[in-house]
Length: 291
Image (cartoon, rainbow, N blue to C red; front, side):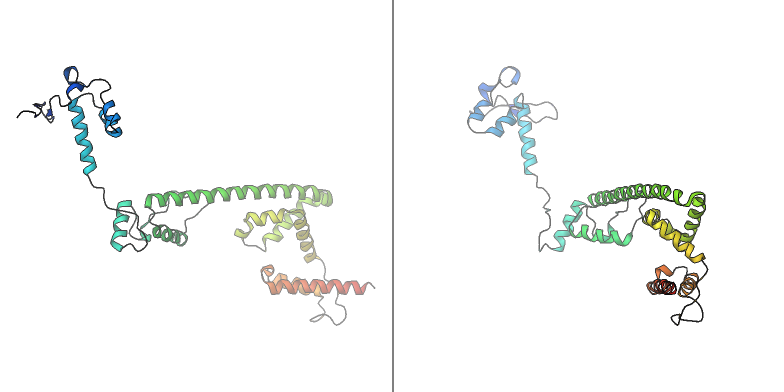
């Protein structure tokens, strides 16, 4: 038929394309003339001109356009982030597409290896899972968030231990300087006795607490511990007047008996208050006796 472009047979497996469909834009061997797309650009077809300029000949151009139209014609899955009021089906479809577990309990958040010094807490991270699931966070992202959180906690704990360690070293140095001068040759013996005195009143895990170690290293605390230990070894003062609560025991002796009978008396507010009151009473009696 007149006016209908001829079709050039194509090689096996390649669709046939109209021969010289672009007329004067074709040079030798079916190649496009250089700059032939400028007319398309001038006509306002910027995207088409850019795409066409990538094809060296008619065959490639038609194949490129055909692939592009095929891609454009494909429909993307109709899955969108659930908005307020979304149906259970919409939420379920979104979670499947985004890699989100159907329930918070299905998240696998525990890392294969915990950071040093940390232990996994199922109850705590169950709460995390509920929050992550409520906000439709994919499992891969959730696991990375939890791992980063644990790493941050471990880093902060390490920094805290380092600071406490520095304080312990500083206090210990100050105590050593102070009490080596005051106690002289008795320094090592009194220091060991003080440590044993404190250790008898705390559980091993409590003694290992860096915060307690820092406190026990402070020079003022060391002095209080030494005075308390020595006070328990002193002979009780005789009772004075009618202010004693029982027999001839002095207030100090009563306090000592309470402490001996209750090694953890410092943890009992009532006993601690009673011991303090007895020592205060003993001091008042001693002061009156000197008058």
